[in-house]
View 1 (cartoon, rainbow over the protein chains, first blue to last red):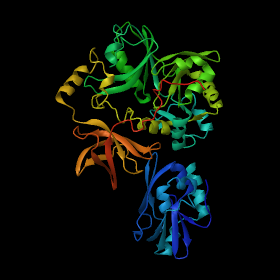
View 2: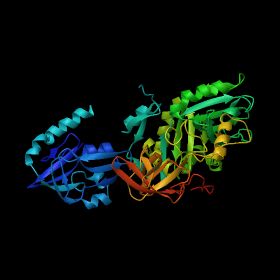
View 3: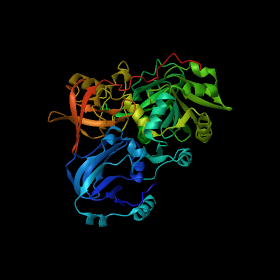
View 4: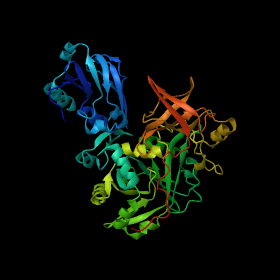
Length: 129
Length: 367
């Protein structure tokens, strides 16, 4: 399972990439693989405040609907409209074309509660066994 | 719970299938992906491991054996080599199982039943068969492989010969493959032209590998089987059909022979006289969002029913589903599907959702 370096991860398989005062967020390769074919994505509206570890988006696969949780608190400044029309991009490119939203970070200290790439790699190896 | 295996469980694991429990068995849900397997079945041909389903062999006169009272189908006018879909009911008219009866000989029948209901079905049938009827639960002896898709006829033609082209929808016969004899029926659960192959369990791996040698054939799992059947509006026992539901409520009166006696008949007649309190409808969603089992169905603020099956439809590109609603809600009615903070707008519509299925095609060509 692909884990990208230089970004943070949650227990619920979201990733967040810090870009200055902003953060780009999405779900991991492990998450898309577990869900299977993604068929629907609901994203928050621009301007909405999302809170760390609270639901901010929904993804549906053929088999199930799942909540997606915010890795950090912040205001949504950009959403990936392309992904809404082509949910399959999440399967093919979870870390690049499959990003969900960009937020203006509220408090960067919150990243202390997240895993780095090597910790997340260990984490998914453990839950796979 | 201790999950049962099929003769192919190890084969699926080696193919990298995602496995999950279904009907008491550990079964392959998907190999390459549900949507890819679904689309491949609609356009080419897929093979499914359906060994979990049950097979009963009953020997005896249709009436004298007691079998005629156990099932809703007319058995008397069935030709040898034909099969017929119908039900086993309890005395309240609730569905114990939906099943296909095969007339093997004048006085020999095969019943193909759902995996999760095998034990209950066996008990019910034995309780109601007469002393001189012979019953055998052959579920562990039989493997069942489903070859489904418009190209299935040519794949089978290459293996068993041109006689396959003469096999009509809902009929069967024995065919020879590599020295073995196998019962093959032109039946299925996908809406596409297809076949169900019954073989000795010990031959399952040999047949599976032989079919997959044909590059047209890909393996497909129960995930695709579910989206394929739902697009056709076919009911699934345990979701759309239960022992609390009658075939009248499920809109399946055409599979019942009211000219004969069968268990549950009186209850159905009474239900028909009193009118139904709810019935099964199909609905189509105005987005890609999927309704799911047990989501509520509303009209305005009024709760009018419950979803029994729902999914994203790969062929149509939107959500589809089936559920039980109050009888006054008919085709064209706008409904809302609700679950927690999920709200999905939908419209009641005629089934099947997918109208280009090839299952009944009579103009099957040599190619």
